[in-house]
Image 1 (cartoon, rainbow, N blue to C red):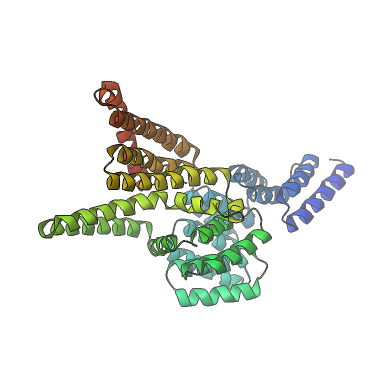
Image 2: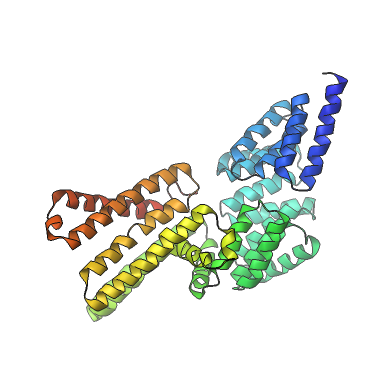
Length: 426
């Protein structure tokens, strides 16, 4: 390689580094690629390119391929393996992520990078105690590592160590007032204590510091939804369940269901009306768990400023899911009060598809979008068939209409079952 190529490569690299410092990742990527075009065998530049690419939404797989190239050129640098671990955990490839973090630690046991990467891996798996242990190990090596500090803050929150968590967040804000992750943690700490206005401020600041921080945007939307007292109550339940391990969540859900069945069976012997009421409350709770976000997005749409934070799919989620639920409730209640089976049928027809639609529109898994989208279409088909049968005695006896109705029912049941087990849900 000529000296001119080397000079060009270094010039592009320096420009890329300057843009990275300004968090202008797309522009930094362009100069880093120019640097690599002049000199392809630069593992450090490949690492920087991987970092700039992963900070752009939806490109983690591409960033992983780039860091693998860097490791192929220089397999002995711990920082590269730590970066690979972070990317793998972001892609939910947790066993590989742990191995990559272990490789980073074995190469440089006195560096915090491997411990931070493993802490992030555990954090994304809701393994709070293990994530806390890794964060503390990283902070023992570098007390100023902001990512380790924020992992610790999150794990304390999720484990219900409220006082220690609040104190930790205040310390982090004092030390790192310009760190987006710190404000993100402060936002969720505020949401946990029910202060949605403070949460909103921290999430806005987090996004000001890093406009591409998707988790902070989601947090901001949660703070907007939490303006509703019903949604705040729901969030308290979500945060309570989030403190449990994955196995603990299943045990909790099973326990609640068993309690419901026992209570309903007992009430049937005392008061059938109370038993029916408990059954309706249970159905409402399960239904709400699927459509709460869509209803929240619908209310955000009515705020001229807050709705700017919604993406296109989230807007449609508000319209189709939130709007569908409210219309369904209105028609069912109106139909019952007026004694109109057609209105009740229309309400049910509008309500059924909202669950598969919610699972489709809130999903980032491409396969899951196709799966639940298909189930939503089939459920809508069944709903239309049911409504046609209600409106016409002739169609009620039509075997084709009956088949469509059955298909819709099966699709609805399948979507709720698959959604409960988080099948193809990201």
